[in-house]
Length: 259
Image (cartoon, rainbow, N blue to C red; front, side, top):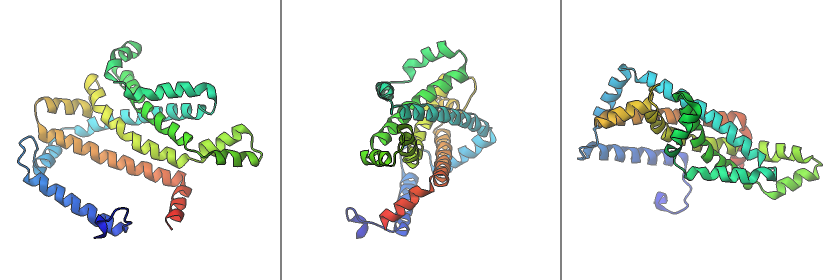
């Protein structure tokens, strides 16, 4: 069968059928699982309904607001620093900061608390730093992958070096920048529960998740995770739609290459 042939190109319809089949298999495994720690789908959706009636929507709004703020700040800071690497003096700094992705945020929590005082600025600073180091790594890779021929071609058009930066470094790979943001935005949702569990004054999904985990309410834990997954998928779709609006040429180029 073609679906078991390496490097085989399949149609979108075939892809959807495979996805549906795998989803059914996953659901069957979930329904027939004998693991006591794994709640049944009915229990998860029932817990989700109870949480929603109990006001989990407010916690979601709080967490999503923190996430959007931190993602926006991280994007501006990381993208600005990545673009500044066209100046050699900023390249070592950007390289050192990008290596911060190997560090644990928990170790800096006391530093952030002493520096910012209240919970909201501390959470925002930790989230922004945590997302920024990964975004910066992706942005630097995008700039490094720009072919030297594009710089040379822009110079043959008698463009100034700053105009070359605008056309080649900023405008050219803008679609890839959106892809990097989409990929790294998920890191924010990974960091969010930890940050909110450390600083609990404003509440949020992280606090709720930590409470339910401590009392082994696994149906509610899975329900919150399912809620985060749904929001994350909607967020990813929105970013993809924004990419299509801002960079319509990217998909045109892809269609031509596929043809």
